Image (cartoon, rainbow, N blue to C red; front, side):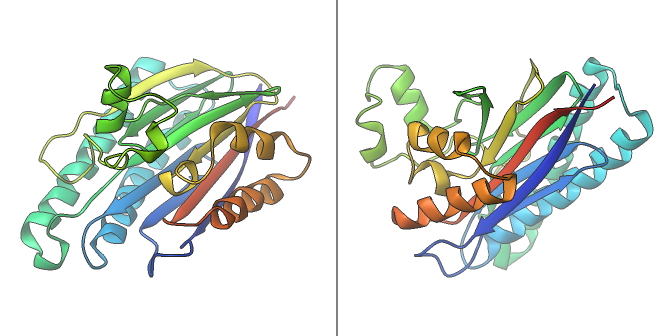
Length: 250
């Protein structure tokens, strides 16, 4: 059986005055969540914090009583419902509170199920998996840039310089309904999962991320190295990372 160890770190970066990212994990429920807020004033951090708190509360209550093995189909529905419920709450707050008008947030989350992991995401916050020395991106951005790449209008080489690279096509709180993408993947002992905001991936290439994740060190050391490298590259946005590593237990 596999169990997961967690570590998270978030940093305001070198340009922004406040941190609109939110990150959390529940080791008992084997649940990890990360959100990147958007909106004027402090509304972005309101949206991201609401998303994390609401979804974590819903799923922790659901997951803990049914450990170690929830039914995948039922869990898929529970995750989708938790994200949809959070979306309605954030959207209602944005519609009724002037200070929160226009706020929204991306989301990437993982439920670790021993030999598999259920991923859900909305927007361009990502999940990567390091297996051995191979880094794989496990989520596909919901963004205008990704659609342009898929259509062959922008090359991967030109993507980092595209003017609309941070324009997302899905987010929590911007409409009364949201489409969440959910997928389940097999997991192996030793797998290392990285959930991150675009403050990391806009500053570092996938190859640079892979090099830092494969370097020796604890989860805390590698998370710190990722954040420090993103800041050294410019730190133009908030930077958040959440690491989860699979270990075999008796």
